[in-house]
Length: 343
Image (cartoon, rainbow, N blue to C red; front, side, top):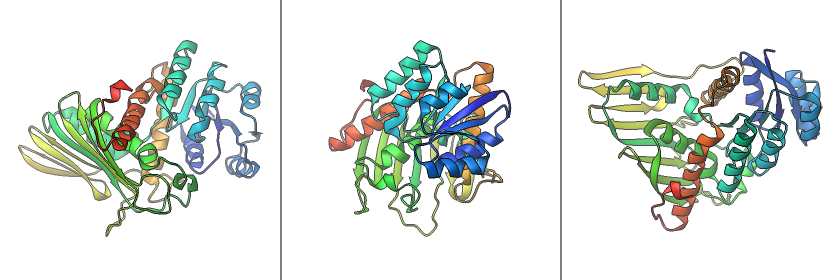
């Protein structure tokens, strides 16, 4: 089991991946689970051999007294559950989107800092093997100072089958998927000082937007484009791959389809396969995301052990969430430029 005993709140669609990853993570594991749905609670409990099952989060935290809690519920429940754990001095890893608005997000961050308790957001896209490979190339300086970047996720994959609630909200692709792409842009290109966004709803059977195009101005002076679509029907379905293009003063970088990385510099081009590992419990095409779930959760355990702040801490995620809010504000104002730092 390891030194850190964890509890999970929420046993839905994606939480199964988190349960698998907690079982593989070195130095920690899950000893209790909580869900309001008896069937889901039984299914996850039986699959992962968890005997301590609860339908009341406060009761679970008080009886089990875990070393950390993983909140894998939908966004509206995040603040009360996060504050429930923080009030008991329990470190929290919380599913994205972190909060429905900036006020709730800031309140949770402030509560964690006041309590002196670690708080991390489960923002896993930057932890994907191909994205980490892109970051590693940038860190070498091989392509020089970047002046343009693009983070692209375009698909027609039926995400509504497993998560039907995605079709029901007034907000969809920026809040659910674009948040990952925007965080990836922050990770690769640094903080943004301006964003201009346009959205569309192509699928008439959903309520929110399923296409978003966003242009970011970064503090470094570079420009990036973040584009997301769940309405793109292409010859090859690339779900859930994120494509990246970066132009630098001395060369360029392309993360293309099927995890092929091309780096071009003064000496010519080189190519690499930066495919994710197919874990024993993972399945294609989800294996890219599934591997990153294990990576981010291992990072959480390592941070608890070493008493250091997680890379995707609650405080860090405020900047990602501000970009989401700024994108919606821009799109609602006809594509006006918004400074996310003002939110």
